[in-house]
Image (cartoon, rainbow, N blue to C red):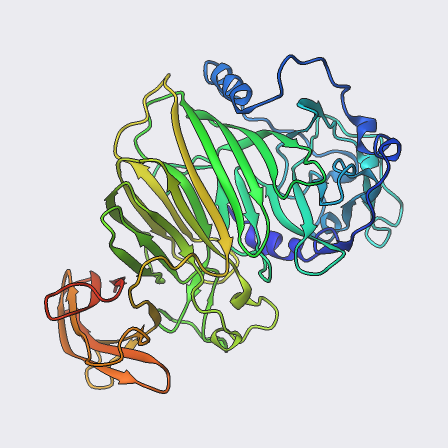
Length: 522
């Protein structure tokens, strides 16, 4: 989906960003806010739960899928970029006004957001639907000089929502989570800015038949109490191939943790459905700078796929730019974790004072329970700029997800500058590549490993290629930079595609570093 040029700027618009927190409002005042357009609660024997969403997903899976689409009418028709940004949710209509820890904005339709989404607040265990109402929005007069039509709403609905909390500065409510567009959602941790996205599920990604984008059609946001440090969100996802029930328990902070539970109900047998998908952007880096004329040394939201396998192996797959679609698979059983990582975190790595790529978060998936056999799949899509997401990673189960059965997965999704470091191995610090100064058809590769684990003798190393030939390889300590530099040249010969691999080992061949992987293409 071509969303980046809109979403990145929208996050910094007046509708996003931050606002100054106010003291908790009295209950009487709170009940006169967004509840004005809420359906009154109905008596319930039990509190609304994940199984209620699963039941709704089961019922919907038995029906033919119909994509919800609404015509954009009134003041929401034919909006340009600046006009959409000029529509803001009214702060005095906050659906979470009864707590001072969290705040919520409902997001309007318009622009690329034309699919109506049902949003409910779960209060005291009872779901209360918030009807779409233009009166809950403010329209900047600079973009709407004649005022806004607050009466015409047709069959439009909300396009999503964002949540806020005190995250970076005392007394200021920063947004930390947003759900908007298909099944996409993004989160930030303290000191980071929006970058890569997570998704509910990935269906037919990279398929020649075209990707299927499932949609979160319904949300239930549970009103947290005054002592709660997290927010529970239930969601119903629907698409042509499946329905699914989700539970997200979101705890913002230095690490924003999204503990996720999903139950999938296929309408058809599913063979290549992506679990815990992440979507990011990679244009170029010092290791992959194909036909780029740009003042910046690197432009990306993520520079690598990191993976800890079920057998305990640590992998670092550098992302690359290619002329053609590339799909890589990493077969595993019960993976310990994987994610798209922004490892280089200094301003000098990017020299971009506007995009601030050094502050983009990494996202790490930690499965809960045994996921069995399958593969982590990485998809790299060709791009010519930084305005399109082109990197996708997710887990693909080996077993087919059978029609008319329930398939459940649980995992922890964390957004933070870097994932937890629980593997005592040397990490790849930086990778560089370029044409050899000696032979035009040969590529030079420079891999800098962290040197802090090596105080005495140098480790040995292993370098290999699936095609072509590795020559002139050596290792050299750079004491001032605290790295071990592994350098080699790659002669592709007649090959047009090759997977490269490098590893530091001891004299017995035991790994002392994570395994560096990269794909070269002509």
